[in-house]
Amino acid sequence: MMSSEQFRSGYLAVVGRPNVGKSTLTNRLVGAKVSITSKKAQTTRHRIHGILTTEHCQYIFVDTPGFQRQHRNALNRLMNRGVSQALAEVDVVLFLVEAGRWGAGECDIVGMLPKDRPVVLVVNKVDRLADRAEVLPFLEKASREFAFADIVPVSAERGENIDELLKAASRHLPFAPPAFEADDITDRSERFLAAELLREKLFRNLGQELPYGIAVEIEKFEQEGALRRIHAAVVVNKPAHKGIVIGKAGERLKRVSTDARKDMERLFGGKVWLETWVKVKSGWSDDERALKSLGYE
Image 1: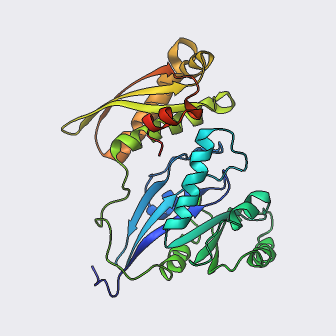
Image 2: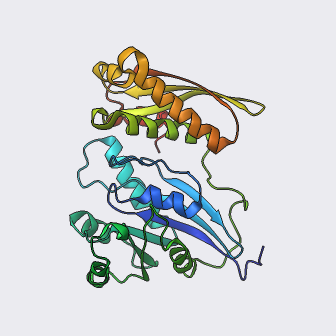
């Protein structure tokens, strides 16, 4: 490891409107799945720290929830507060937008961007443009919206230009010793990651039937050697939602649990015994005390 006079280390907030690919980008940058993803907006509800350490630099990425324009309940307000706090605390901001798309959501976030720290505009999904020649005029237009320190087009899904983004980001990080061990990939506990992986599978398997008011609570997490025993409750707002999650003869919840268990075993590097059930906690998403009990800060 290099001396602190040569080594760079710092926090980078990944911000953007909902469903623009922030978690996919964070996972791609870290090289591991530390943040859950789905095609549903607002999949990410917590600030997640993903860590990448190279020979010359330690990047601590803060994957934030998508900024909500309408503060519908306590959960939305809490997520927006998380975005604001991340912008105030980090060394560098990675502002993620979708190539060819600049709307009211982007304008809202531009108004929140710090003027005293470098902001890198990351233009995602360039691979989806029908004509790659459209990228340049979009970059020119975006550059007039804010004094960006750098602008980097990428495809987070395909991993295109990720190395260039890392190089650009590293130039703006302060010279400092690493804050985490070289092999750390996140500061979140396995208990937290287990809840997030289960919630991801709920989002992916329920599709359009997914109740918005759904959460996961890990009630017991025990480790016996390489085996982890995890007891998880799927929390829903209404009794009617319980049947949606469980499915006919329990098949849907069984499929969700199996998919989540396989991901947990890959991430944790050992066998997982997972027991899941569904319970009703009415109004949890608009109850500050309930949010705190479910791990929301």
